Image 1 (cartoon, rainbow, N blue to C red):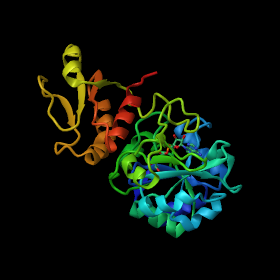
Image 2 (image 1 turned 180 degrees about the vertical axis):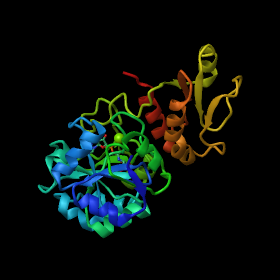
Image 3 (image 1 turned 180 degrees about the horizontal axis):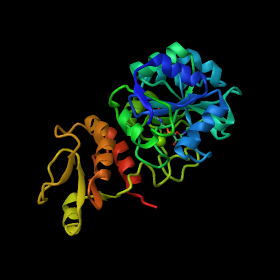
Length: 318
Ligand code: TXA
Ligand code: MG
């Protein structure tokens, strides 16, 4: 199993040697390598069994480090950066020559994020590194929101997990493409699109599995091993009466159900709190003795949109 701790110097040393380190972020835990070392980055793909067509996000301390990895900075970037970074937003920008092809899957663009977690910010600041980091889970599975989640699945393949406690946002970053004339959202995530629209005005949300620009957005993704069924619990619960089921709801105890494996994500009805608890609930129910996980549709607003997106992908079994 990997060592787990809060030793930033150890993490920096390993990363500088070309090793992998799992890092905490406010969205989900990342599996990091030095982005400018292609052999180190290759280790990420191997550890996650991730296909090489799926590009990685590069994590930076602040925008002063951008010059290393980005070719030019679109005007809209500065406004968004001032409003939302560090935080749960990833910018797709024209890449510089210095970024290895393995990071961008050969794309002319690179995804950049400034994570907002104190330990990882200290790591980025002290090391001066640019860190390529996807979510620290085997490809296709639910993203980890604690050091233990990382250890459960990747503990045998990495030397060190930097433990920053549970991720507070709990759902991956929102991805915005600033590399083309038309600005678009490519992935719904931990920053509500309503907040982004206040800066950009209304822009297209192209959060579909058919989108070739974000190949990680496959129909089936973020999925536990158990079959997830998304819909109206009042209809689903009677339909699945003959089966052992786990249940995910927003704020209310479901009616007519034996007390069992129920996860109420936010009794207070707060979508941010629900997002922060979603992945842990999916992981927990995946380990229980249930045949199916029934989940209700969340309100299609704020982080509810990203929650519905992840549940939809989790329910799309191949
Ligand atoms: O919150 C997050 O974004 C987390 C934490 C660790 O920062 N990272 C994360 O990475 O979710 P990952 O690799 O699991 O998802 C990154 C997504 C993928 O769907 C990938 O296709 C897309 O970002 N992506 C990365 N670079 C891209 C690019 N140049 N153009 C389009 N999509 C890109
Ligand atoms: Mg991922």
